[in-house]
Image 1: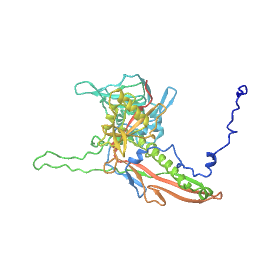
Image 2: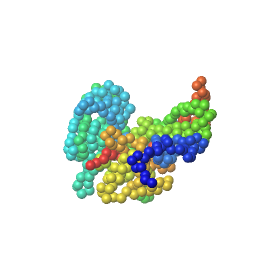
Image 3: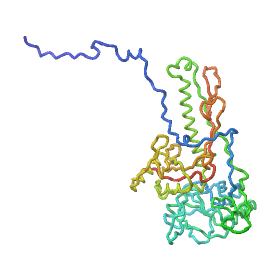
Image 4: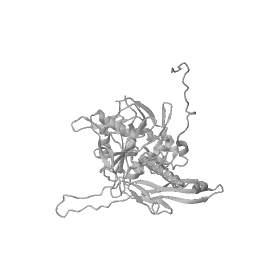
Length: 471
């Protein structure tokens, strides 16, 4: 029998096939789905919260008592830019230590008007060591190197100054001095300069300004390298030498830190809380995610808050600039050398990556240490912990923070209060606020916190760290 091959075969479509078993879509109606808890991408490692020693503050305020110090250095100011013209904000002149506390805006405005804008190219000398110091300089933009003479007559870098830094501020006191260093532009620099003669003209018109500067500039106290009043001590003497009398004076108005607060109101509909609590409690899951967000905000405030944040409250003398832009091993060595017992460094992940690239260029192997079971990059045995709350500016620069922690170590500490009503975590509570007319249950979620720097050298910052990819 022959087969007719002239007629094409008829394909059986999926719809025409007879289903022989239960479909997966139908089966899911009878099955219990395995599910995860609600996930949150915004959760970070929060190393700063984890590594700060937290001190219980039962009174809600923490007072930092220090030895009395007399500040005669330079502060940091802010500028206004209008096209290529730069002006200092008059009120910002009070950042200069000899003008600190002076609030006559009329006098400060007259003084600000006397500043002259100057531009310098890389390598150009701004002031020469040994020459008469007759100007006060404020760096509006750029980087300046302070150059001294080394042991064998060669040039040595004493330090670097960046945006907002000043030098020569002590000249307001009328000290006939000479420059102790040469200031040289490391990059293109915009500077506002005030001749001492111009200051004297303004001071002659405003008695309050002159008297304020004279009162702060003529204290006549002997100080150590940290600006603290010297304790006279006799050593190596023989016989019945007369011993000097001494005492450690304290600051009369010590810094006080009040606990800050972060709060939100969590709302859950009663129908959801009543009917949809299996297999996971909806209120608990909502609370878990809310607490995570509050902790993220808490760490952000510890870094960036203008009142107690670490970036804003680090002493100006503990801020240094990078040698060239990206963070180098030399930069981190300088940062570590500024304090005893540095325990941690914190940096944005991009800054850590930039430092790793600089190590690779030099053929240096970046080490690691174990921190709570994690292998963390380290330099000189000090872990470099990631902290995404340290900002990266629009110019692709960031900062690296180095710190010593603990009360007994005269370091940086976190502040909180435990044992508060309805506490669910240390320093964090959840309080029932009631049910409104729409049957929505409200809970007030609150955390109280702050941070304190016990002595200025407990923390230092490497500023203007370039994190952009380099060709």
